[in-house]
Length: 98
Image (cartoon, rainbow, N blue to C red; front, side):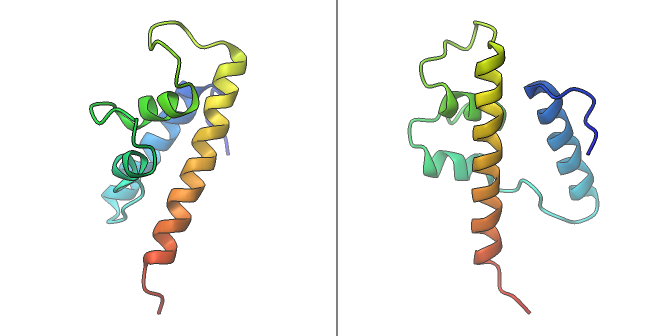
């Protein structure tokens, strides 16, 4: 997979684009993602977009204004993929199978 930039912004942009394309084709890629994050991480801000929620989960003491270090960004990406995998697996297991 080529996303252009392997930083958080590049990954978020790719995922957002994939979500938009899937919606155009009648799929529900990230439907319920923000809500799932709030249900599983009760201290997450309900007024935040999903990628800001991920930052808040991964870096609970981060002030939202200081640029992320390379190590912090790598940690946020690792948490993002861990949580996204858990979300998709949970949603998949809840769907009836033919």
